[in-house]
Length: 454
Ligand code: GUN
Ligand code: FE
Image 1: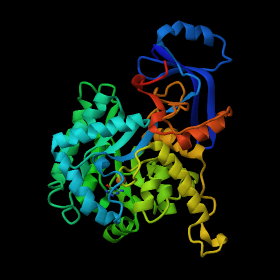
Image 2: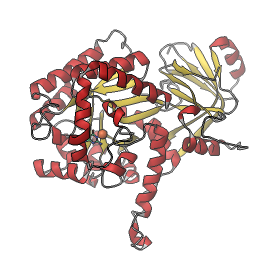
Image 3: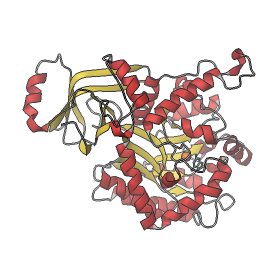
Image 4: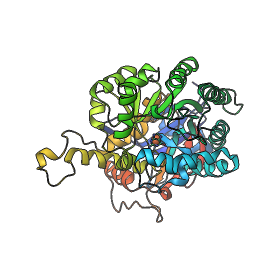
């Protein structure tokens, strides 16, 4: 470990496990050259004061009323769909893709069009506290490299995939890989681009093998992508059993569930993230748990496109890795605070049920609810486990990716009044925070946004 070069003092919240909020009050966190947390020094540790003094100007003090949390990990973002956020929510998935989404994504082959929109997206996500994002880019190779370059330039931790979609039966002529050879060659080109990038020596931005979903890909391409991911040791992302239609399509075409089919193609690995996964069977969940593959739970998007609520609590009890995603633009909100809120809300709806004509005992699914701490854990530490990256927890050996939230700004939306209980402050903060409350963001030890603290 390198010796620490800077430090931050204040009160921090994190949730290393799903069921306990940890409050680090009046704590000193020291940071090394490598962007890692070197030490977490509590107030009762001998030498905290002298350690603080030694940092001089390299010590940031969070002001009264400002608290910090690990940066959010958004496990599912369609970067090119950002202009569509809050639009086009009136059709089911299979029509939405053809009518709205493919035409928009195809426009990103124009790199000037892409740059303008991708830069705004990455800026906005960082300003909202998303320090790590797992991005679907588009089918276009060069525009995918551009998104990766923008993440490198702006300092975000990101995983970026060229979207593979080569089945002529499902993808329009104007927006499709020419065939398996091109799909594989272009995916490989993006992997090489990121691995050889002179400004990405720390691999803060990683390539991802990204079959859009089984319905958009040929069997040959899916198998070859599984082999490529294994050869290159890359992350994998795709959609799995999202809606009745998507789930049924795979069952009809391949005679097995989405998860079983992905496994057969070599796409269920420890580094695979499956978006949605609403219709996983118990056997599918056991399969994901055995492989160490993760679900990106997109609670808000599921309201619009998934025909059901993901049984989150059940998946956690079956030891499936789960993190949260916004699914921009299937979910019409880009903030991970919002993803935490919707995760709690949709779990309550699943537990209680929705049809008032039914008796309460038949209306819902028992033992489904999760609380805000669990949602926050999934949005931070859970995302880190899903990606197998040392992020989302404030402890030595984890990356210093941090968001400072100022609860006092008049333009913000948190009003604590006379609250002093840290757990109550945490709840009001996660439920209430807006972009205006985010005072500072650090990623990989670097200051990306600096506001009031200091
Ligand atoms: N399934 C395949 N592509 C997509 C997409 O862009 N968004 C969502 N929500 N589901 C998908
Ligand atoms: Fe999606």
